[in-house]
Amino acid sequence: MRSFVLCLWCSVCFLGCADGVFHGPNAVAEAKSPQADQSAVQKSRAKESKVTNNMQPKYNKLTEFEKYVLLKKGTERPFVGKYTDTDDAGTYICRRCNAPLYRSDHKFHSNCGWPAFDDELPGSVTRLPDADGFRTEIVCSNCGGHLGHVFLGERLTAKNTRHCVNSVSMQFIPRGDPLPPTITKNSKSNDSDRRRANDKK
Ligand SMILES: [Zn+2]
Image 1: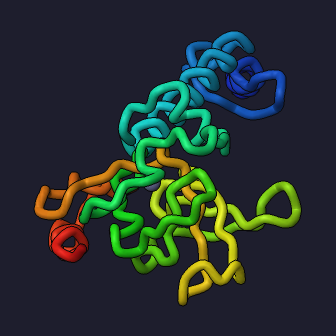
Image 2: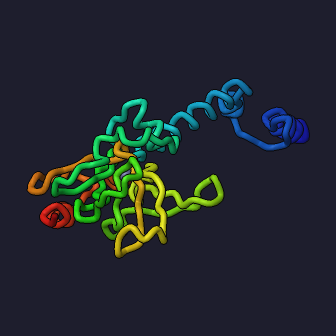
């Protein structure tokens, strides 16, 4: 009987692993090498990255210059922009995400060399302190794409406001044409709001 108890005790000790935790008869199979752990971490990170990328909206494809302006806060040269002097009725939407930004009746001729607007569609434009410390940057409220800068107090219009916007940050949709869906984080759009926006001048 005594030898039986000793044998049982020795078996328990043998199956216990070096870290003092008993893992049972499958302990050898469960043990993982450092390389295996690293591989598991890499796979986990790759999976997380894939999930993150899948959550990113698929915005409009941009040219290198559009990326420079919209994503890197660049500025196009004055008096060369496509919309600097346009007067047509319609809506200006974000080049990156299609969010409606300005109506043509917000636009005025400032002679500054870039398209100028003295108002924006409600909630469409976000103002941020510029990195230069004195100007106010404007970005698309939906996608964060750089639009330009806003200036106040110049007395150019009754609203005393000038949104100085890069043509390349926008796309003009003539009045009566359907507005493309806004690309949002939820890939949802509000067709009725867009139609309403483009029905006006
Ligand atoms: Zn946008």
